Image 1 (cartoon, rainbow, N blue to C red):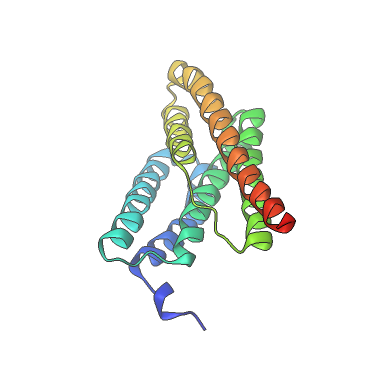
Image 2 (image 1 turned 90 degrees about the vertical axis):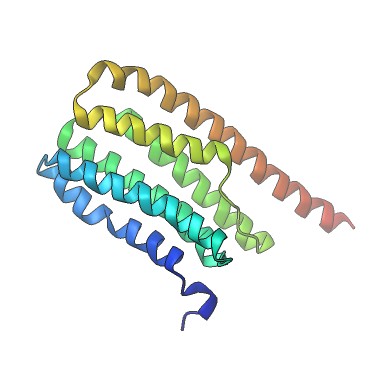
Length: 182
């Protein structure tokens, strides 16, 4: 049974954002890119609202700290995989995006297992999600030149966020080693 503290509108919005992957995948497959853009706008709105409402109503929960970044990762991974499969999105770029997210998920799970702490999203991670979303917009709109430039921004954002999360993971692991020495 779910704890009452987890039954919040902000957590529901994060969960709904994960479900957006299903129609988005279909619309990408059928090349109904206008509908994909509508879903992306809704996903961005729910992403903003879930955090805003959780803070405003003092309903920040442990589940929400997991659901929100997970929703971002599932949404982005679903989009780039579908775009690769059905619309020619570069495989190497989709692979980099998904691999970075898998690294973050595995690192967060490791820290949770060892330290029972939830690793919060950080600013480089949030920026990289937005840069990726912008590049997907350019790709869907057929703005090839902008997409080509956006690829460089995506690579930079992925690299910065990867380094940032690696440093977070190393700090958590270092603290554990220090505590074991005591």
